[in-house]
Image (cartoon, rainbow, N blue to C red; front, side, top):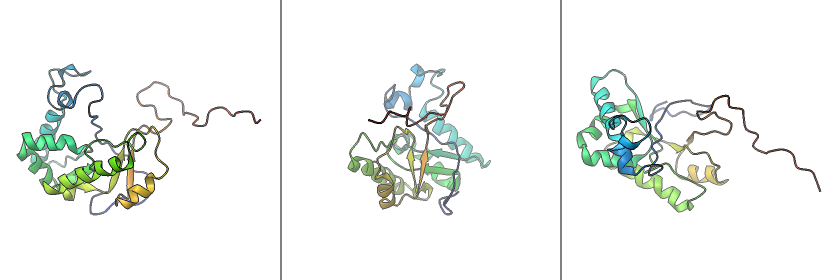
Length: 191
C-alpha cells in the first residue's frame, strides 16, 4: 500500500506508532526527557531520539520504512529540527503519516467537531511542510474502547477510506494466555 495506490479491501496488518499524549507522562517527557518512563535508559527511547534515528536511517537509503500517527510530535520535531522533517519528506513512500491527526483521536468522549478538527489541523500542517504526499487516507483509531455508530459516515465525509485499529476486542495486548472476550456477556433471562 502506498499513498498513490491505496489499500482497498481486506485486512492489512502493519506496525505503526502509537505515541500517547499526556497519558502517564507529559508531552515533553515523552518527547525529550523520557528518563522516568518505564524501560527507559538515559532517555534513549524518547520520541525525539526515535525521530532522529529514523531520519538517519532514511539518509542511508537502505529501504527503511517508518510510520507516524500523531502529527503533534512531528510539529515539535520540525520546530527543533527542520532538516529532520525535510529528510522525512524526501523518504517518499518509505515514510507514512497514518491518519495525520494532531493526536490519537477519540470519537466517543469528545464532540464530533473536535474529532474532525484533530484531523483537519494535523493534515493541513503536514501539507504545509511538504508531507502531503506522505498522508494516507486512513483514520488511526488505536484505542478501541468503542466507536460512535456514525463514525463511518464521518470518516467518509472527511475523505478517509480505511481505518487503522489497535486493541481489537479479544486481542492479547501483552497478557499471557489471552482468551477471546465475549462482547455480549452471558445471556440474560427473559422477563
